[in-house]
Length: 563
Image (tube, one colour):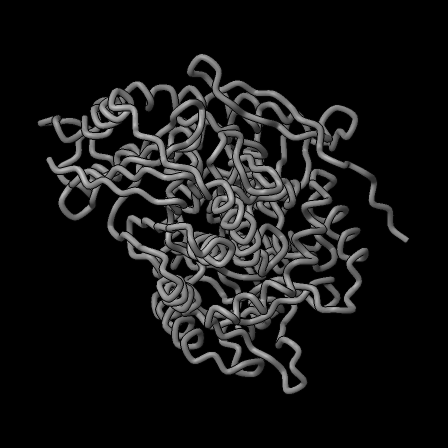
């Protein structure tokens, strides 16, 4: 089998919004540094940005930063934020919009030059600018204009290390199985978080970058918050924005008015717990009264946007998407049955303020490290409860990671790979191809999904249920050597299965360690918030091949008090 060898200054793994922003900003910071972006799909078409709403969170000049900080720490992050990082994020966003425009992305303006914006709910202290749905395609074009090289249909499975530093990556082509070995002065992981493939729009997030970083020795943080769920229509499984405010049980009683008497910043896990308890009590099915759903109307305005900004590509995309969901629906009338749809958004790769991981030479950007930055606090990866922050977080982290990686790579000759290390990776990764019989990857995927989807395992948590889930994961892990791949795509799927098992374990281990309820993390057996014992981060790292759990003080922690 042939081996293709590449050498580059900065290797970016992932060609979505974060990877492309990292590559562009690295090249802008150090034009002399060679930058290579590798994607297992197609650079400029991967990731989640081109499947989102095209919304970008920001504060305009003159907006009250302190009011935003108080709201964010008190109402959303529940005191677990790195407040310096949060402040940096929100005060950078307006400037990032201009940077994005300089790369050829269409961001909409008012006649006076200010950015066109919508709000998730009026009165919430942030805005959402609007861009077109072709954002990553425009960025890919700009990257190539700057001389960034791209390589498509190659999955880079494992990171290479020399002397404790990352020195490149190894993988294979999804087209013909040819090996690819890339030597690099620095590596940026931008290949997404873990969503367990339960929801179609988020299914591209397979967690393989998280697993590669873990095998390389990187630490993880805030993994207990990787449990994001959205409300979905029971028959189509499409997202029902705003259902959290209009939920009714079969008796006609309002669940929403009981658990959230006023409209809040997006959904919360407490409504999902209320759904679960109502179903256990025999009060289902649970329905959303769409005639009362204010957010659905606001979402249509933001997505279709014709009354705010003329976005032909976005309007066409959402017209097709929502049209298919409506055509598939069998429900009639305003009372639509809904249930939680587990997404995950596990994003725990720990990074510092330069977006460097705990492994020298390894950086990260985007969803893979959103919780790992510390700024979101006690919620899953953006958007969490701050709509529009998903794409903005990808850009913000990338604009730090790209230049930092370029600075690291300047003057650094990529090290030669250790042939023993490469051979060990090759034998492990290609093992499923050598099996004449065995387990299909999707069979294991479905078993893991059966552990992650139940509300009683991942939203309303308890020690007993999480321990049972960990026991089931251990049984799955013992069967992973029996995975069989019939082609290169199935071989990539086998690698993703290993990542899925690891990510699920990280989630449950961290959730067991946080013996309180805070933000999106709710423990049935520890229902109260406990600042005295748990206002810290839960950190995970490897020790003798096992997951070791420690804690870390939150940097610069200080109380935020309301005026």
